[in-house]
Image 1: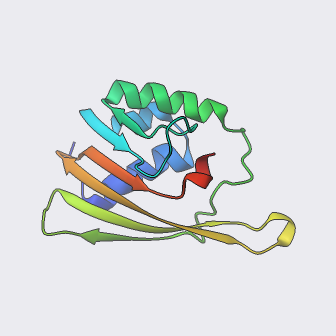
Image 2: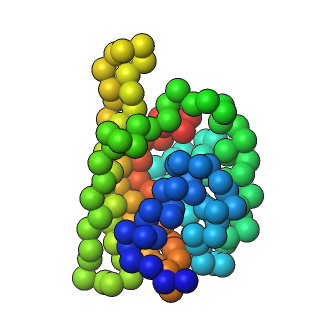
Image 3: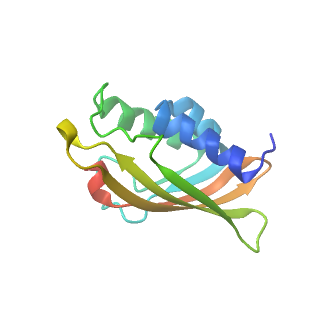
Length: 138
């Protein structure tokens, strides 16, 4: 499967953030793909490092099952902004994201900024480093 960085990123976001489909998320990765969240402390609900498509599938299934079906913290995709940056390496791109969560009961929206570094091969993610505030997954 091939794809532009935009297509790969769109598939990844839809599989994870939008649909919470661990099978689809795992399929975004190569068989030996790595998903890392370097800022997440050991023992957190969200896994800090997963190696291999099977491990990604298993751990993310368990993580998604812990989340409430209706999540008050679900991002508002219409307000969320994302910029993809090309690098000198054609197999690496960076996603700069400002995720917006609607304010509770009419309160102010909350914006959470994060950065994701993607290394790709043949349209799949070989390594993804996801830098976000660990508070989001605690």
